[in-house]
Amino acid sequence: MIDPLQYLDLDVSPEALLIPAALLFIHSLAVVSAFHSLLHVRTSQAAIAWVVGLVTIPYVTLPLYWMFSRHRFEGYREAIREVGDQHQHSVTAIRRELFTEQADRPTLSASSLSLVASVLETPISAGNEFRLLIDGKAFFDAMLMQIQSAERYVYASFYIIRDDQIGNQFADALIQRARAGVTVRLLYDEVGCLRLSNGYLRRLVDAGVDVHSFNTRQGWVNRFQVNFRNHRKLLVVDGKRAIVGGLNVGDEYLGDVPSMSPWRDTSVEVVGNLTRKIQAVFAGDYYWAARSNLPEADWQWDPDHDVPDPQDVSDAGDTQGLAVACATGPADHRPRAVMMFAAAIGAAKERLWISTPYLVPDDALLVALAMAKSRGVDVRLLIPTVADQWAVYLAGFYYERELAEIGVPVFRYTEGMLHQKCVLVDDSLALIGSTNFDNRSLYLNFELLIAIADRPFVSKVAAMLDQDFDNAKHSNQSGRPLRPWFARAGTAVARLFSPVL
Image (cartoon, rainbow, N blue to C red; front, top):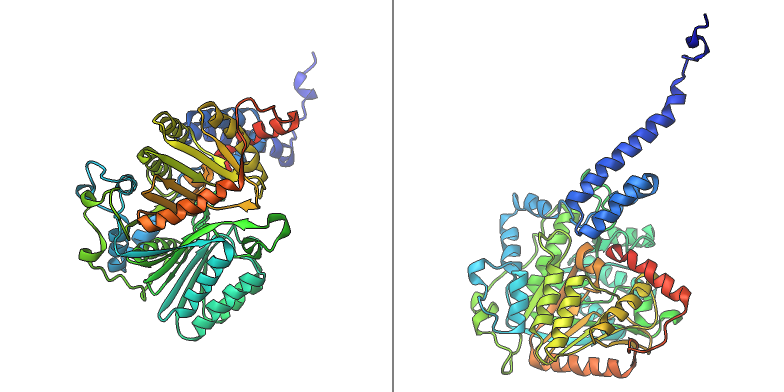
């Protein structure tokens, strides 16, 4: 009788088992990740997409899932509490500047500014002066002048810093103040400054500038948080003057790069109480990046001249000096950036003009725009003709058609690269800063806008946008011929990736 076992080779080497074991591990981890996506991914559509991808092609989808699926940034609030254990006074000041208690919020919105402040749970600041900085030269002139005027400290945070002509002027200004005994602290985003040379950073550090990257991958929990960014652009000097806007530090923002020239962008220079709130935003980011306090920061507070009663703030009359710091990000427990834009859109009665370089809104904002249009509001959007981010640019064509179906016109700027982030509500409110009208800004980036209800300032913003629309063409009229098939295909593919663009 033949023994069947004699034909079996039972001498299996460990190397032969390695590949099956690795495959089993990958598929098991993919199944676990699929269940994780059902519990934690923000939308049901995205959860289904991740589950299908993880089950069918786990070798490709698994690493992408752990890099790009997360929408909540872990550890940021814990870092502030950690620093607060040793520096309670500073953390208390930050909370006072950026958050209001429920009892202090208006029950009925008296103004568009109050509505934005209420949904963000942040106080309105009075006693401010504003200067509109149109395009790069005005921004860089004001920024360098503010740095040179610093007597105690300079705080700066930018998404991108270039080692080029204007980047070196910026570095020289910081170095000069540091050598003069002024405390100078600089934050930069690790991804945005990926190409920034070590020599540039070393020159700053050697001169006494306190430099930190906003590294989103601190700690084991955050090891794969590569999809989050600190997209804020701000400067604070001595707690009294500040600049917030959409410009980074580089020659292209001056219009010195031919393919992107001229560069159209907007910032705001602020003098007054709002600067402490902008300073509080920097402090929270600094606590995360450096795990340290800002001992030199000026937090002096005068409630009689700083925060008005929200019930007394009205869209009527010559309001002056009122503003709100709109800081949003993936550490928020609620989608505060979406809520901010929805509040501003909902407050519009006569006109709503939005200028943004990236048009990838979510469903909630599309509904809000449709409701504003139905109320008879003059709703219009301004986006670029020139692309600096091709995937986002292509996705924008899809949403152009979506907006055309609800009667909202989209205009494409024809006089260069449009990069400004600006919202105008009636004649009463203007929002300017770093927050784009796209999913990345809404859910994945740390952003900062300032909402201003200063009538003279708002009128200047209206005149600026009026000129911008004169330099644009209506691009989503109904009845226009369809684009070539390859452009439509690229648009459709780009739209699929809109949650991470």
